[in-house]
Image 1 (cartoon, rainbow, N blue to C red):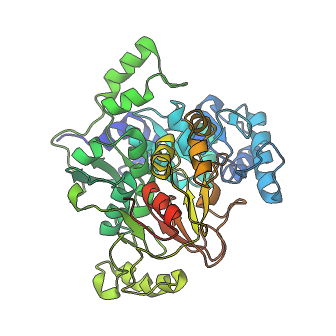
Image 2: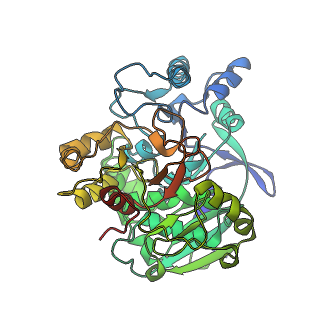
Image 3: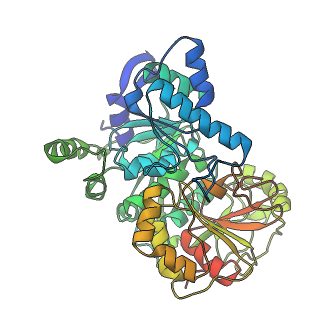
Length: 463
């Protein structure tokens, strides 16, 4: 029997088979930031250890950083302390840090791919659930807890139970205005926010293969929102062209040899998956969420469902509570609903392709007066590229502001928060209660939907 892409990469990294279901895996790259690393550093230091392979570890500051005046001291005391502690720990353990002011600073899941640190066939971990982003390159990438961060610091290995495999196939041609964010929100709405629990997902099919690398990253980023351990896409010519020439990618003959190896990383035709779903790209429309988990999504011109409309029992149970928090009613139409906040950013949609899409749409237009819009690039490199292309000027003329890189209003852990009771159309990945600030109400959507909403002042389809 053939092997899946996941099995091929996993087996390359097994150091020791502990039991029939548990392996000791070697970890190629360990990404860290200021939120989940301090306790792990403290843990190894209490045991008299140093980071085993600091050259395999890359650090950046992203969750707690402000997105304005990054040259000034961070105002929030806790945020400032966490960023300072990261700097201190990295210095003590010889780890490369892309902190504030560094030309490579940015969201950890944006800088890895754009610097060529992320490569096909790797195992990549980070104390952050959206590490699944890097699976777009055909790598096994997943988030880990603090005790596991400590394991990797100490040994560059990780004890893991091997997950089951799932394939999600999307075939056909996407409609105009339908983006990768709509694809993944559609998939999650169909299989639920727990439908991928216990699985590692491979995305395949002609619609997936047609996507750019940045769009593929959006798909894999939100694998965790269906409960999956991670998601991955087989590397192909699109992948190789993206990696080629990047700062830390192989070069010359080393790159050619790497491509030969990476080209083998695909599921065999007779590979067996534990579960499989097949979707038609033509069925996908621009999507938006209405509830408090990413599985509570609808086509943007549909009505908020009633309990009788839902198949998932968990969704039925949480519907009333979610709608109460969101201030919505069953049968309500979200299209045309006034909102006051729009957020374009996060590790899901803050890459240069996302900013180009938005700039192309808002060029020559003005945002609605009632809208507060946050446009946050995913990295310093994205910010500089946007300025080089004049995107910052397009935003300014439309009444928007391009800020400095960070996680920003994806989560209420920094200065960028959505006020209590306000609706925010957001390109981020989670719409949990209080995710963007205490009492904030998050509606997940694509960058195009967010841009159209910002221009009109109400939930809109980009025409």
